[in-house]
Amino acid sequence: MFQDCYKEYSGVCVDFICLTLNAEAHLAETLDAWYGDAPVRRLLVIDGGSKDDTMKILGDYPRVSVWVYPGMTTGKAWELLKNKVETPFFIWVDVGKIPKKGWFDEMMHQMELDKGDILGSVRFNYKDGRLEEDPIIRNPQERLLGGPWLVWKEGVRSYHVDDDYAQRNIDIIIRRQLEESGGNYHLVTTTSHICYLPTPVTDKEELRRRHIQCAKGIVKYITPSYAQEHASYLLNDHWMLMMNMLDWDWIKETNPVWLPVLKEWRIRRLLIAKAARILYGFYMRLR
Image (cartoon, rainbow, N blue to C red):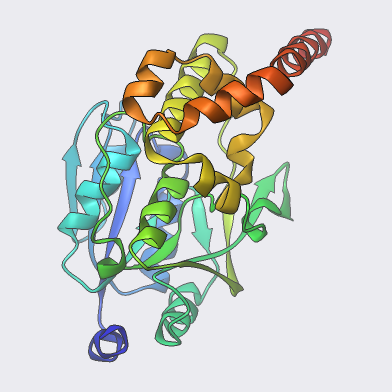
């Protein structure tokens, strides 16, 4: 069925999805690259309520449809957009990720070879005028790091989240649901993209809010056994400490399989993790 779907659709335009929020810095460069490299049937966008020129820039491109949902999580917005896709394959465009020339053709070739239901590519981070390959994306125990992806729509048909905690961790949530429905992610190493790294968050309260939201996302959408086998970074001291700070009654109600894991970690690592956090904070203040 998969191969028949590909053969029928090979060479025809595909839908693209994109999430934006105050994205003007790299939006035009991103869209210029995609419209120049791939057959864009429609660009489907959910914007989080941008206050800059994001909407104006989007209006300069053809076949764009935009829905504005201020405050919606990226995980829910991704779900709504993939449900609007009308082509068997679609591209997740991540603003600030610039594909290598020929990216689309190579990825469609790999899809034809049935390499996976979601295909990602090698990432090179742009920083201080230099390009450095990101080692995280090569490690199957680390994060997929979001788009750009080529996605077989049927492979993510069952993907679903609530509009709550799937914000900056949607790559692992999508991957888990994909694999549990029988699909798989594959990293294509024969093409790549450039990533403009976002400006680091320095506001302590905002950073803490984001970390707590991600910790809740881990508890709700991931299990310890899945993390152990497929995403061991979720079990490091940082994220275990963040989950340990959550209300335990909420954890019990949401996903109680985390409780014995957190209790065991608390006995072994809590004091060490807190001490390391204090020392790191002291070091940062001295810089």
